[in-house]
Length: 100
Image 1 (cartoon, rainbow, N blue to C red):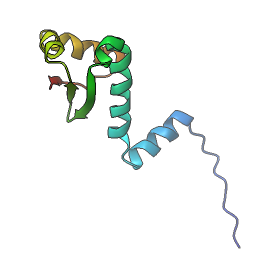
Image 2 (image 1 turned 30 degrees about the vertical axis):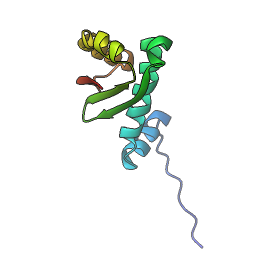
Image 3 (image 1 turned 60 degrees about the horizontal axis):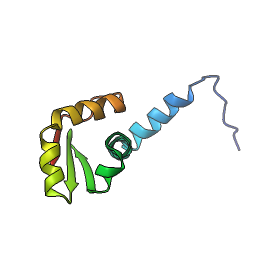
Image 4 (image 1 turned 60 degrees about the vertical axis):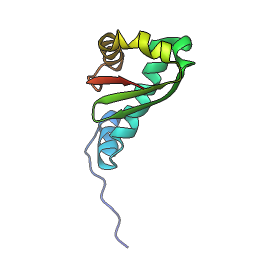
């Protein structure tokens, strides 16, 4: 039985994790979770109470709200919401916000 040779290559843990995520095509799921966490912390509990679902698809964030009044109110500030979420994410994942 042959013993495997140990390589003296050193990689940083964050590089190994990035490679793992890319190799297993986990980016979409991780981005989805990041967006949900940022939405909850940025928008606050009052809006979260009326949020039924979030879905990030091809740069568009679809937000399901169960209050038509809140949907109308938020529709006036979708560009500001998009900017705030991208700023909190520290990357431009969201190109458009659609309120449903």
